Length: 65
Image (tube, rainbow, N blue to C red):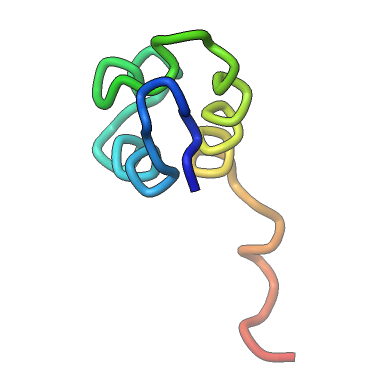
């Protein structure tokens, strides 16, 4: 799925940039160009950043029910 239409950047590339150390929308833009056009994808990139860097309550749940 494309996150940034202007630069044709898919979600896999956004995740890769974050895994390589991107911490802000600007970092992601510098790494792959996403978010450097019209800016409408900034909120989507922020969601990927938050998911990658914020602890999740789901991580504390047991793996089996």
